[in-house]
Image 1 (tube, rainbow, N blue to C red):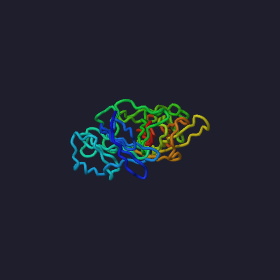
Image 2 (cartoon, rainbow, N blue to C red):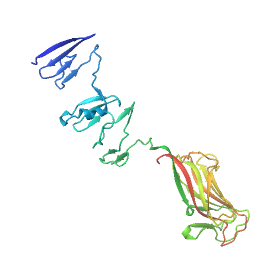
Image 3 (cartoon, helix red, strand yellow):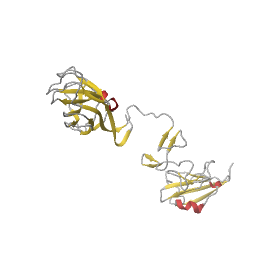
Image 4 (cartoon, helix red, strand yellow):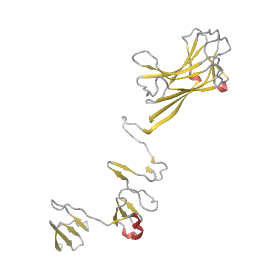
Length: 314
C-alpha cells in the first residue's frame, strides 16, 4: 500500500495536493495516475488550467538543453504556440521547426478548421519531395469533384488545314480542297470546272474543347487570297432550334498573303462551352468575287488556332 501525505491548500474552493512515495503528484485528486509525474484533475468546482513558462523562440539558445532534456517545453508567446525539445531540436506543437532546417517537418498550423504549411514541400510516399505536393502513388477523388485552378488558364487548340472538309452544298460540286506546297501544308480550292462569281465556297472542321472552356479568340493564317476569307466558330444544339450562333470569327481581307488574323470572340463572348448540349465546329467561307478556273485558287489556309481559358483540369 502506498504511503502519502496530504497537503491542504486553501483557495476560494478547496484543493488538495497529494504527494506519493513513488514521486507521483496529484492536484485535486487522492488517486493520481501512476503513469504521470503530475496529475491535475478537474471537477465541478475546479475548472483551471496549467500555465507553463512563456518565453520566445530566441530564448531556446539561452536554455541550450542537452539530449537528455527531451520533453522540455514552454509557451512561445510571440508566435502563440508551444515549443518542445525532442532531444536534438526545438519543434512546434503546431507549425514548422525552429532554427536550422530539420530533417523532417514539424506539425501543421491551423486557422479555424483549416490547416496549412508554408515552408518547404510535402511528400506522400516520397521522402524527398521536389514540388509543393509530391505524391508517389494514385490520387483518388470522388467523381463529383474536380481539380480546379486558382484562376483562369489560357490554352491553345490547334486545327490543321487537313482537318477541314469541303461542304458540298455549293454551285460547283466538282471543287474540293487540295494540298499545294506540302511543306507548308497549304490548302486551296481546285480540281475541275469553274466556280462562278457570287458563289461561296465552304469547308468545315470539328472542334473538341474541354467542357467549361471560355473562348477568347480564333486566330487564322490566310495566304494567297484575292477574296475575303471568313473563319467562324459556331455551335449547334443537339436538341431544339437548328440555328448556328457564331461564337467567334476572323476575317481575312482580300489580297492577304500569309497573314495572321486575330478574330476576337463576338456574339458568344464569355460563353462557357457545354459539350452536353452543343457540338462545335469551324466554318471557313470564301465568297468568290472573280471566276475561278483550274488550277488557280482564290483562297488558301495555313492553319487555325483557338485561344480559350479554363478554370479546372479536364
